[in-house]
Amino acid sequence: MVFVGAGRPLECEVGDIGTPAPGGLVVRTTIAGVCGTDAHRLDGDLPDPGRAVTFGHEGIGVVEELGAGVTADMDGLPLRVGDTVYWSPSSRQPGIASELGWPPPAELANPAAYQDYATLPPSNVVCRVPDDTDPEAVIAFGCAMPTALGGIARLGGVRPGQSVVVQGCGPVGLASTFLAGLTAARQVIVIGAPDNRLAAAARLGATTTIAFERTTVAERRAHSTIGVNRSSAAWGKRSSPTIGPPSNSRTDTARVSASQT
Image 1: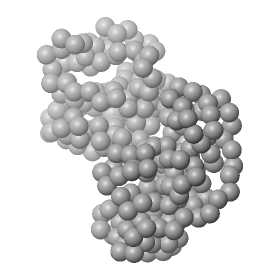
Image 2 (image 1 turned 90 degrees about the vertical axis):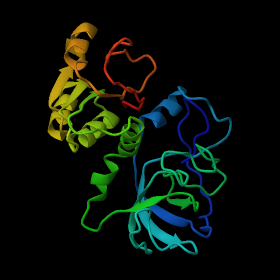
Image 3 (image 1 turned 90 degrees about the horizontal axis):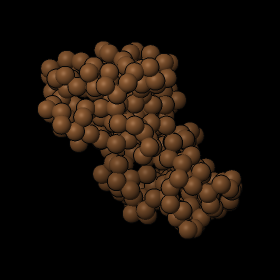
Image 4 (image 1 turned 135 degrees about the vertical axis):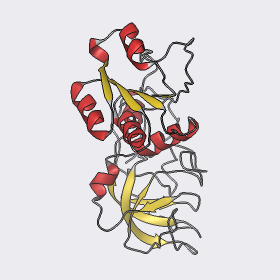
């Protein structure tokens, strides 16, 4: 599927399947997630790349061909033709765009997931999906889980006894909540909406949930800044309101921006 401009439908184009370079691979896409940034691009909220491009950065597929030298995934697990893998177009460092840039030109073989066959360059890491794991359970985290992992890493991790505030309970916020819940944090506070997502946050590890739509900024700050050590902002638009600790807060607070949609 090819993006040709904001406000226009994606176009279906037919092309040749790429050949993997040494260290790369070709994957037959079976599931491609839709990220909020994809919708923003279609609506024109993101800069127009000025050329036809492909996108889709949440992919699951079956390995069709391995380039020379490929024997394992990023975790060292053996990788063979026919294995199911998860990938997000990246460089050797997850979260950093590949050498083709993002989104990549439609006329080049590339790792975008909105196509039947994705050609991953040697720098693109993949994770093999275990045989007993439902691929739909993996794609449900889409790019939200890698984003949350990167955000928590940038915050310096969560140490035992610390308190965590997650601002927003979309996919990134819920992934952050899940990760924080796996730590020895003293409390995990989630601020967001709607109620069904707050309920999901509670199931994933939140010890306290605060409804954004039924509280004031002052009330949210009163309930979420005392003793807070880590704060993660997971709102997807620049116009999203500030709901976390005030700038003069005396807590040890860091902040990471992510996608709410």
